[in-house]
Length: 346
Image (cartoon, rainbow, N blue to C red; front, side, top):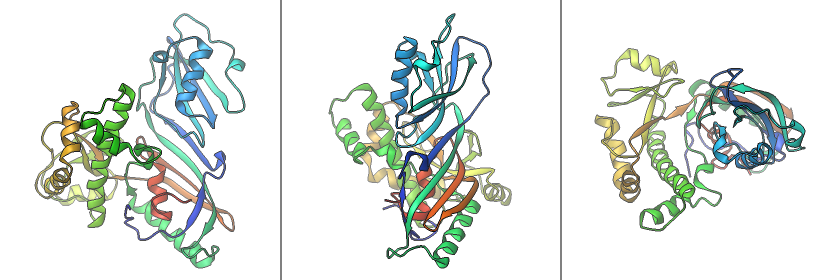
C-alpha cells in the first residue's frame, strides 16, 4: 500500500461512475503547422482505447498502423480529447462522417508537417467528478469532512503530489511486474508485450525509491547528492552541493528532485541519494539486471508533480469535482491517492 505524505485517506468515492466523470484533454506541445504530409486530427473519444482509435483511423484512411501518430495512451472508460496524425501525402482525407459515431467525434482537422511522436505533449488537463463520497466509517459527508477535504486539497496545491506511476502501468490484474520477472528468467513474449513489461519493471523500481522518500518525508525536497530536473523539461543536472538557492528553487517548483528509471550505467546521484537508490536496487537484483540486459540506459524522473490550477467544487452533497493539469507522464491517480487512497476510490 502506497503511503500518502498528507495522512490517511479522507473518504471513499465512486470514480468513473460514467465516462463524463473522468475527462482528460491533452495539452499540445506545439501548434499545428497548417501544412505538410500529415493530417492532424483533434479527436474526442468515449468508451474507446487509444489503440481502438488507431485501428479505426487505419480502416478509414486505408493506411497501415505505422502511418498513425499519437502522443500517448488514454483511458478507455473516460471522455478523452487527444491528437492523432495520419500520413496522407498528396491525398485528401476521406469524409469525416465515415469515421465518426457516438463514441468518436473529430473536433478539429488540419495539416501538419510531421508525425506526432510518443510523448509529444506538454501535459494533460483533467476534470474528475467523484460521486457517492463517504467518510472513513461510511458516513455521509458533513461540514467537518468537507473542511478536511478542502484543507487537503490546499496542501496538494501547495506541495504537489508524489509522482508515482499509476496502477495502469502494472496491468489490469497488477501482474506486469511478475510477468517481467518471468520474461527476465527466459519466458518468451511478443515485442509489444516486452516493451510493456520493461516499462512496468522500471516503474516498480522508481515507485519503490519514491515510497522510501515519502516515508521519511523527503520526496518534495532535495537531499545530499540530489540530481535535479528542470520544471516543464526533461533536462537534469547534478549532483552538486546543496545551497540555499537550490533549495529555494525546489520550493518554488522551478526544480524537482528525481528518482531513477533503471538501466545500464552508474547511478548519477551521489551521497545520501545514491545510497537510498542503491539499497532499493540491491533488493531487486533480477529486475535491475533484466533492464540492463535489455539495453535500457539510466534515466531520471521527477519525484513530484504539481497539480497546476487545482480547483474544486461540491456539485452535490456527496459529489466533488476536481480540475487540474499535470505534466506529461504523470497520473491523475497520484492526486486521487492523496485524497481517497491508492485505488482512487471504489
